[in-house]
Length: 592
Ligand SMILES: Nc1ncnc2c1ncn2[C@@H]1O[C@H](COP(=O)(O)OP(=O)(O)O)[C@@H](O)[C@H]1O
Ligand SMILES: [Mg+2]
Ligand SMILES: [Zn+2]
Image 1 (cartoon, helix red, strand yellow):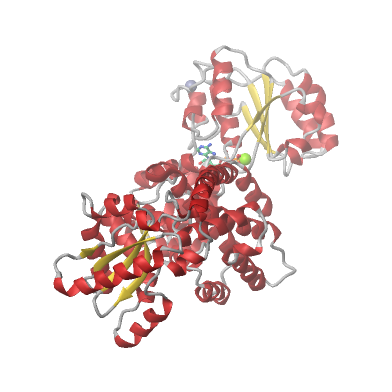
Image 2 (image 1 turned 45 degrees about the vertical axis):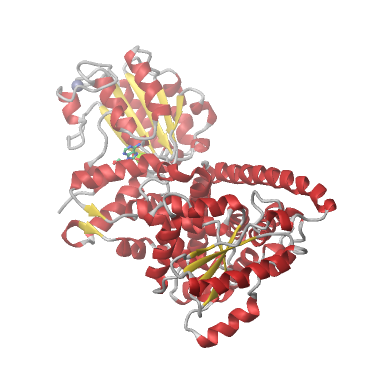
């Protein structure tokens, strides 16, 4: 039989503890400088090292070479108080859960009167001290207040408030904390290496989340996963199933469905959550976590992997694609809705209904009149208008979408009947195509993700893409050849080698005729110059110059736009701070 991981790896010195520097540093300093108090109170959540630290402190105090901040490990006391040691007669560990009455306190008082048998101090560790009754504490008061010089007390508790204040005020109080995810992640990775088990990508992140900051809980879960795995390999699928998390594939589906505004797919996913008996609350939590990851990816870009520890590179690339599909405003809005749902989820309403309501709110940001809701709407408008950086903002929001699209929806659907591939197919596959581009070339992807599929003409195999500015078009044609990368990606996904046609988002009035004319010209030339595959409409900047009055208005929306971006990122930042802070973990703990 093997003993549990958390017992085999119980730290034997303060330096081996993780995530408790706020306690270990001052304690070690006090020990080094021989400024040791006669009573200590260690408080904090379970499994964070309170009992362990009490034992280490006892070991430091009674080490033959002590008091020291690092026990020697060789003297009889150190050996007896080691992980596998027999325990020392001079260190008395009392489980207050079962010895909490007045009689026990009196007994303790009597024992404290005797001098230590061999070592420097007689040390009493009262574990789970909150279980001691007030009468018990009162019986202890005198001796804790003024103990004989050879006696030390260490109280450990999850609920310091239940330790009566008269006792508390006579101790040095050290609060332990939940261990932050990053540190826990590192620690568990180390543990797996020590144990020579291979874990699939993403498994440790799941364990860290499930452990909720408690080292013992995390180690127990890891232990269980290792025990249930064949030939020392822990698979992601098994971990997800055992820990009850939402499989990342399902989250991918939901996120993609959200960004494509595909409500049917969203509700199908909700249904599958319910039908497969998953905990709806867990699903909402997991969805929120994913949204957070997307926000991180969008906010920190290239360096996302330093924030999202343990997330493999290709996963980050996938997240990046998803994040750009969403946009910051929609993301913050979605996470607000999801987080609200999480807070308000109760047993009273049907969980399925709650999930569906949540999804509806995410899908229809227009329904919310919050700041984030409006930002999300602006985001979508922007994308429709393709205004980023260009001067088209003055135009009414809806007009350009129809106006500049010479082959608008109707002709496109006609083509469907003739050929197998339609504009809709391109739109549906676009995220996947972009993901491929992303993998092949970052610079190509930077250009490509700003493009929008306008139309696919199956007869001429011409794909019309909307560019937001001439600069984008230049970049598209320029070095690194995004053109080729994109064409190849399309070929891989849809099995067709397309030719590209460019279109700009321009004001709706004058240009229409010009653009349409240009289109026909361009289309005519497809056959003639088949090798000239990038068909470019002249940028009709001059011709498209709107009437004087819109020109005046031009500047305004631009500045509003930049302010909006500011606000956008500020919004994301504050949300990030909120989500990365300690609160969620506390929350989690409270909801258990
Ligand atoms: N800060 C920590 N660093 C490393 N391991 C820890 C830490 N806290 C807890 N552990 C692990 O969890 C186990 C239980 O810790 P323990 O000190 O009993 O927690 P509690 O705070 O509930 O008293 C230890 O044996 C150890 O393996
Ligand atoms: Mg304990
Ligand atoms: Zn020693």
